[in-house]
Image 1 (tube, one colour):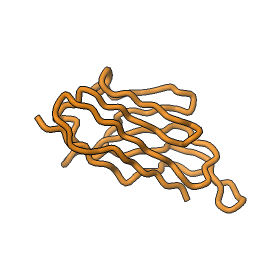
Image 2: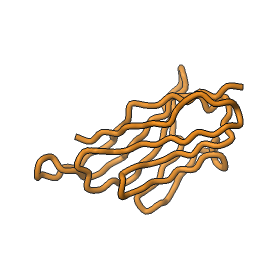
Image 3: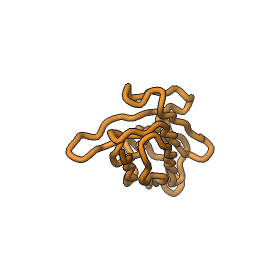
Image 4: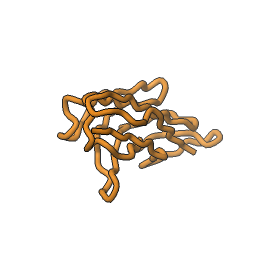
Length: 125
C-alpha cells in the first residue's frame, strides 16, 4: 500500500513563504510524476505544479515565478517552496503521484493516482 504524507502548511502573512513536503512510503520501486494540487473552499481541486522523475516541471500560471517544485527521488519526496504568498493562495494543498511501481510482499504492482490527506495553507492579508 502506498501512502503520501504532507507537512509544512500553516498560517502566514501575505508576502511570506512556506515550504511543503510530501513523502511517499510503502515499498516503492519507482514513481513517475509527483505534484501539488490546491482546493479552496467551494472550488474544484486544481493543479499547482508537477515534476517528473527526470525533473521536468509544469506550473499553473498563477504561481509561476513565486512557487518552485522539486523532488528527491532517493527519498520519494516532493517539495513545494512557496514565496510571495497571496491571500488567494489560501487552500488545502494535496500531494499527488500519478503512477508508479511498488511491492506488496515480493510481488510488484502498479499504482495510479495516489493522494495525500492534504495540508492547510492560510495566507492573511
